[in-house]
Length: 523
Image (tube, rainbow, N blue to C red; front, side, top):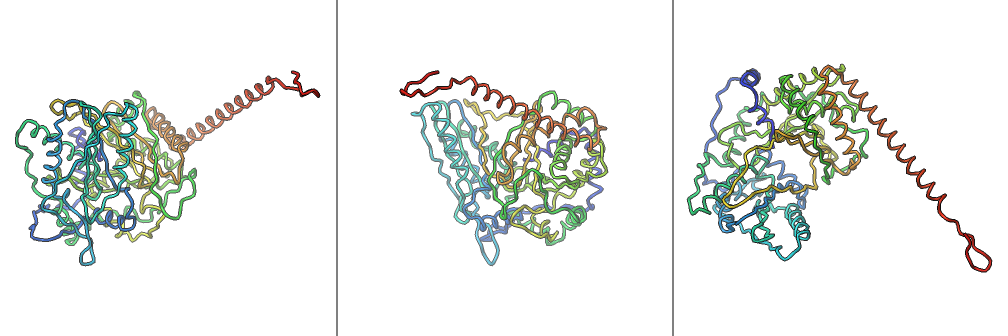
C-alpha cells in the first residue's frame, strides 16, 4: 500500500542524506530495542492497537465485510493444483497470524494462535459455460467471496478458492480480513505462494528464510513500548501539530451527511496523459520533492477549492515496516498519518510544495505513534457520522517492474472491485513509472458519479497549470477552476439548446392527421 517507502528509496544520495538528517533531528537519540520472541506457553496474546480498533468495529457491525482484503490471480498454462494447495498451507504453517482467531478474555480482546490449521481450497468448474458467461460468473463468485464476512472468534481469517475456466486457465481467489493483513502483507503472501509453488512443483523443499519473529511478538513489543513511554515524543508532536484542527471537512457540492456514517462506495477511474505524467516527474525532480508530495499538494488545492477552507487535513497510509524483523511478516502494520496543510496567504505552487514537503517529512519522523492511540490522546469529540481527524485520504502506490514467473504459467492480477469505502473520498493513484493511473473512491451517500468525474477533471486541470508554472498562485488556480466550471456549464447549456431545437424541428416535420366525419384520415 505504501508508495512513500519506494519514493524514499528512489531519492538521490544527496536527497536521502538530507532526509535522514531531517529525521534524525526530529527524534531523540535513544537505543532501539529488539523485538524478542515471546514464550508460546501463554494461551493468548494482546492485540496491536490497529487490531483492537478493527475488533471493536466488528463488535459494532458484526455483519459487515468492510475490512475484507481480496485478490484474484489468473493462471494460464499447466497448473499443478496439488502444489498450489500445498503452497497455501505452507504459508499458513509459516505465519502464525494466519492461524489466529480473536476472542474476549478478562475484559479485553485477545488473540489465540492455533498450533495447526489446514485450509481447504474448493474448486469451481466453469468449463461448460460460454466465455461471456464464464466471466460474468467469475465476477459474481469473486464478489460473493470478497463480501462474505469473517467470524473472528471461530476463524479462519483467510479463505481461498480455485475457479477452472479451461484445462489451461484458472483463477485463484483469496480474501483476508484486514485484522491480520495489509497491502504489504498481500505482496508477501503472493510472493511466498510463488516461491512455494515453484519448489513443490519441482519436488524440492521450500527454501524460504526463517522468520525472526511472529506477529504476536510484535503485538507484545508494541504494548511494552506504550507502557515505557516510547511513543510520547511522537504523541507530543501530533498534539502540537493538530491543535485546533477543524474536526470536519465539508464539501460544498456534497449531499447532507447522514447521522450514521455509511460505507457504501463506488469509484471513478483516472488516467493522466503520458505527456502530463512526464512533466510532473520532471517538475518533482526540479523542485527536489517526490512525486508523492507534488500530487498530494495538488490534491490539497482541490480540496480547498471544494470546501472553501484553507486548513486542510488529509490522511495517508505508511507501511510502518521500518524494522528488519517486520519486513517479511504477514500482519497489519500499516499506520495512518495526518497531513495538515496551511493554504493561507495565497502561496505559489513552489511555496506550497515546500509546505507539504516539510509536513510530510515531519510526519514521517513521528510515524510510529499508532493512529488509534493518537485519537485517544487528542481527546477528540467523536461522532457516528464521520471519521475522526480526517475524512479524506490520499494513496500513491507503485507497481514494481518485477513480475512473478512460475514454471509453465502466465500470471495476470485481476481487479476485485470493492463496493465499500472507509472515508468520504479516497484518491488512490498508481505510478508504474510509465503511466499515472488510479481512481477516486467516494461514499455514495455524499457524492454521485457526476461529482466524482468533475473532481477528477479539476484535479487534472490543477496538475496541468502547476506543471507549466510553479509561480502561479493558489488564487489563480481557483480562478481557473471557476472559469473551467463556467465553460462546462455554458457548453452543457448550448448542448441542451441544440437538443431542444432538434426536438422542435422534428415535431414540426411530423405529419398532422385530420379526422374526417366519415372516419377517414386526411393529411
